[in-house]
Each structure stands twice: as structure tokens, then as C-alpha cells.
Image 1: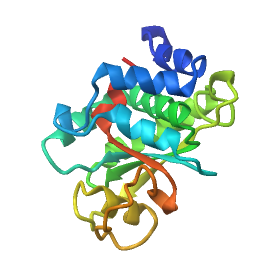
Image 2: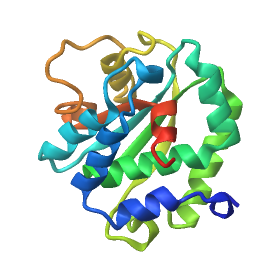
Image 3: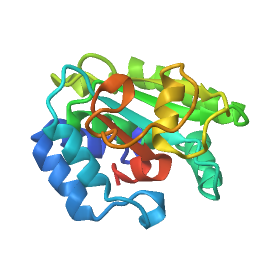
Length: 198
């Protein structure tokens, strides 16, 4: 159904491209976090791509706790595949093989929709060891926020994902160099990641 509406075009293009080329396109698109006020998405991706590590992660922060959350919910509940596709493209672009979507517990419907969509995407070959039949592996899981971390603070979110107390870490190092479990990590919000396939 998603495919019939022109979905997956971005991911199909991405698996045929060199990672650096995808990153270049995202940089040139001018995509930024926090509705345009934040850090350029492509630069974060480039840092993760350029950092050598045995494992890399993509984290989608769907718990920003500000006005963006309504739009986040609309995407997760109404068009979850565009978010999954955006995360898979981020994975292919940076060499990350695992993604996490961190959703607040107050949104059980969004959690359920995303979990179902991830299962469907896995069955359809969008996620897994060979993304759309390519040599790229990328899989993801949904995590429900405990609500006990400093809202929207990236490093606190990482601690929460690792099962630690959600306290803010000292920076540096940047999450893009040492993020989740000490590995290079892209942290983007829902809207940034959902904008990637477009």
C-alpha cells in the first residue's frame, strides 16, 4: 500500500548509491532538526559515516516533549512507513545497522502502530539483513520512554535507551562519535527522519 503511493523510492535510490553520495544529498537538501532551527541533519550523518566503528546506531527521538510531538504522532500513527524508510536510509548512508525509535509511554497508539509497521517492513524486506535485496543490513525496534529523563536532551535519551538513569552526559564526546553504547550514533527527530525519503 505504501509502495503504491510512491513510497520506497528514496530507499531504492539509496541502496543503489554510495553512502557518501547519500550524505552529500542530505547536506545539500539543507534538512535541519527541530523544524529548521536545529543542526544540519547531513552533517550529523557525515560524522557518523566518517567515524570507524564495529557498530553504529540510528536513534529517532519521538519524545521531544514540545509542540513537535503532535506532528510526530501524526506521522507515527498515520504514515509510519515514511519514518521507517527515513531511518533505513540513514542506516544505509552511515553504515548503521540498528535503529531505535524512542516513543513516550503516553502515546500507546503510536507505539502500537510503529511496532506493527516495523513487523510489516521486516516481512517486506525493507528491514533485515538485506534491505530491499541489497547488501546493507538495517533493523530497528521501538522503545517506550520511561518518561524519567530530561526531555529532549539527547545524551539523557541515550542513557535511558541503555537502561541507565536518564541523566545528561557531559559532552564531548558528541553522540555522533560516541553515542549509544559508546558507538557512533545519529540522533534525529521524527520530522527530520520522515523528511528524508521525500
